[in-house]
Image (cartoon, rainbow, N blue to C red; front, side, top):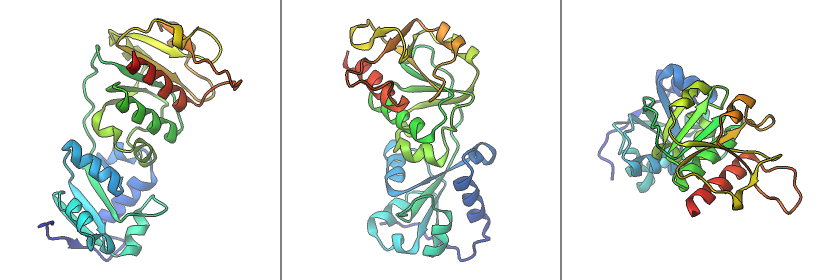
Length: 257
């Protein structure tokens, strides 16, 4: 049971709530504020499992009455207690669980030139990006390098789709293509139009999987620097796979081998 004494907030103009509304509504606000809002019991528990610090827990009065959520809230340095209507005003969920954390935006780590990686080239859909992060964490690609034009990695929608994967990955965003020259692992691109079939190809291990824009694919300049271009056979006859589905197939194949 939590021993943290909560601070009760009753005004929607409270500075904390104004900051949280900004973080919840603007996908790139975390870069300017230097903080991230993570919402929901699952994400908060995932952060705690990884041992990451939480500066602030924000909890609805109803959630505070649940021992499990109260204990989860008490793990943070500070706790703010809100009426349900105020919590709903900062929530991005259709069915809020009534709990969230404010954390410091992690500083960008140094690029590991030898790590199994995923390179995101202007992947713009937040759901796709979060799903790819989840697959990367599941299949052992511990580093994700997001080129400029990719959806903001720590935005609320990407966080929700990632389901806690963020807290176990080395995430670097806002990179230019030139930064990838630091990698010592080979780049492998996916393509729906050419290249060897994935099941028959010899995969470098480790490698960096390059995943491109939903409509345009991988840029021509980046494609030219890839050691391999591979396609996923689709006997069902579809023209192409969703980029997140393709990522899961490729990352699984790397892990399987």
